[in-house]
Length: 198
Image (cartoon, rainbow, N blue to C red; front, top):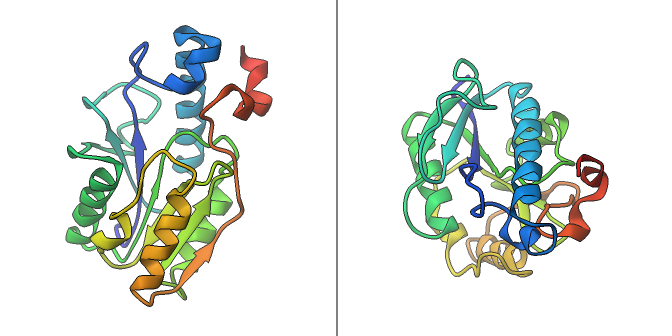
């Protein structure tokens, strides 16, 4: 099972520290509530994926939360920008004999286990797999070899993240597979059916 590894990057649930762009219009408490719902959904979806699952926390490891310890290994994110954090997680996974590594966040309520499985399958015939988000970023990245270049020269949290990443892949003369475009929740307009929770 360790040949397929699913890495989930999450922020710790601290009031005023999560979904800050969303909080500007709905307030910190509601933004935290939405983030808790997203974490719960991400854990449910990820638990159905046939892979070694690891949760990487932003600040501190939580033993008793949405991610049950018997289903998820728990780690701490490295320091640096988002690319540095993801690369260190990927490097760790390949150092632990992974053959395919998929990285996701916890901001996408449209992702499901079928899409994640499609990502693992795509790596049988492609070097990379990307899940485009409708804000110009991505909700998923996967690879079958450790490579820092794919995370470099990317201006994170902008509408060019996906494009920058594809350019990095093309510079390496590698192949990539695109999954369906989904919504990442960053602002109130992204909430969709999650508005029902408010």
